[in-house]
Amino acid sequence: MPEGMRRVLSMKEKRTKFQRLKGHFEGLGSTQTRENTWQPHHELHRPKKPSHLTLSALIAAGAHFGHSKTILNPNFIPYAYGTRAGITLINLDTTLPLLRRAAALVRAVAMHDGTVVFVGTRPDLKDPVRVAAERMGENAYHVGEKWLPGTFTNRVHLFGADVASNQRVIPDLVIFLNPIPNLHAIRECAISHVPTVGIIDSNVDPRIVMYPIPANDESPRTAELVAGVLSIAGREGNELRKQEEQRHRELAAFQKFNNDRHRRAH
Image (tube, rainbow, N blue to C red; front, side, top):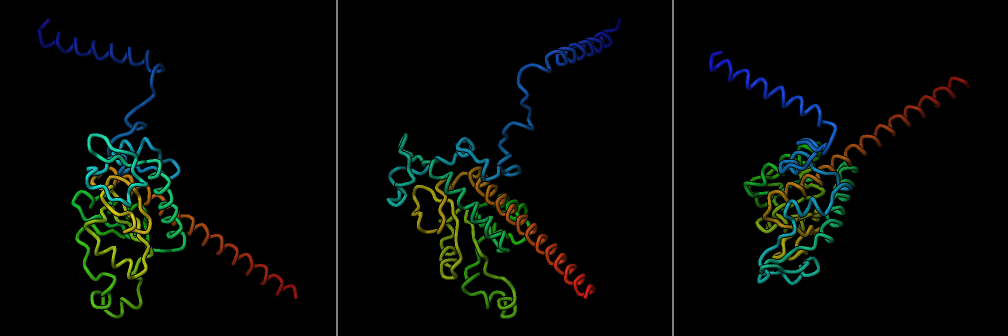
């Protein structure tokens, strides 16, 4: 038999043997696959619901790493767990409820037909804010480039008098994934009375935003997780609003039907 033919038969035999072993052991052992186990890209494309978020997910995203202990902001101390190797560790037992609180806020804003803006102006944050806004759907926007100064405080000059007067230029909530480079935007939100949510690291004063989320602000995976969880909450709020609007339409139609029936009866 030629050498090439023997090699082909050998490969077929090995494949047949492998398939036989796979069929024999298929019902035994672990059922984990690539689809049902955690993958690094899941934080961006498959975020968890706020109710399903765990400390393990935050740790896996590196949310507990702060900055050097020498630059710890005194106002951040309530959110600090301790230090290791000169690095401040963030207490995720405070991060988890504060993230869920922010998610409840986003859900409530969306449920009442409010607008939300996701802001992340680092190159690695462009995709998270874009995907978060797209996932949330209507009434969600994103800023992935530089925040244009005067967007809120000088809106008449930037957008024109008609747009500023007749359209919703000022959002109901702004979410900052990197607050420090966007302090001017946070000031505009404060002047315009717009609530703010932000990822706050150990070197930052948590009071710069209204709803702080203590976490690592330099980790793209942490930003993806936070933006994903908040966008899921916003999508839930939109769905609740649509369900409520549908219920009101059905109730109005039922009342109209009863009124017409009583009118015909008399």
